[in-house]
Amino acid sequence: MQPAGAYVNSSARFWGCPPPPGDVLTFHARLPDSSPTPLVELPGVADQLGVRRLFVKDKSTRLGLPAFKALGVFYAIYRVVSERTGGAVTPPTIDALRHRVASEGSFELVTATDGNHGRALARMARLIGLPAKIFVPAVVDAPAVHAIRDEGASVTVLEADYDETVRHAAADAARPDAVLVQDTSWPGYETTPQWIVDGYSTLFAEIDVQLASVDETGPNALAVPVGVGSLAQAAVTHYRSQNRTGIPTALIGVEPDTAACVQHSLSRSEITSVGTGATIMAGLNCGTPSTLAWPYLRHGLDAAMTVTDGESRAAVTDLAGLGVSSGPCGAAALAAVRTLFSDEAEQIRATLGLDNTSTVALLSTEGHRDA
Image (cartoon, rainbow, N blue to C red; front, side, top):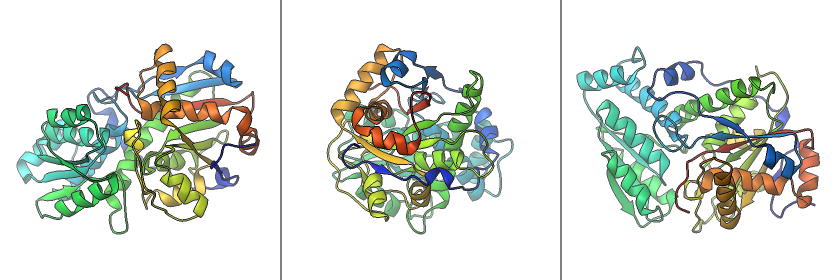
């Protein structure tokens, strides 16, 4: 048996790709509040699911913000500033970036967001002295909008879905004094989204080091929340890197059942846009996969699963009871793994080579918020 609609690619673990660039870790190490976030072992959950060990990568705070997004946005803005102002900023620090902006001229950073990406962009813009304009769809909750405004950014709320909001931001950023820094891509707009994906690579490098410190060579399975697929692309890049050694890792993408654009696309073997509905997993409420991420997802993702709001909400509560602060998007990974290790998913586990000897890791991509 397997859950209705689940997608499995039995050949994904044999696919390979180039590794991420080597300067990302150096850049992040020079940022304030740059310490690795915890990898928390949950033996009780492992026992419930029938696996050997289970770990949660807790991204409830990163670089002073309540989600992983700053890793990608900060690195991408560093690359944008370097490109627009005459070459690499050295040393790659906040102070050096601020000095470069002050001496070489200002421009406005523009993006669309459903929450954490926009707040991270607004924070970096404030730190280095650049103005920021953020567009958000009306479904984004008021506290998230206020948090972005509190960073000093201009925020425009649109009566539109995420995809349309992205198109609006791209049109606004066509001005000569503006730069779009968007975490999804389309034909002709792929360089900056790739820098964002590159920035996420630090997260997976940290997991390797943290697992090695407890005598694990790597997870047998990793559950990754998926919106447009950029974080999942970074996961595929890391675990399918042609120079990677160690055990193969089954990569499981997790989406809301109301916005499963990646699962639908994988099932059809082509990028497919889907209509999206209301969900508490606002950061995953995306209707079209990133064109940049698509080849990585198609060839390197082992499985794609969906979760309901109810399942995500229950996982938030479960994680809180175990001392892990997680929002609905992050807790979706636990919700999916619960399904993966249920009786109905026996066929999927067999295909992925998962059993009671497996070590499983989850990405909890955001801190707690009201759900």
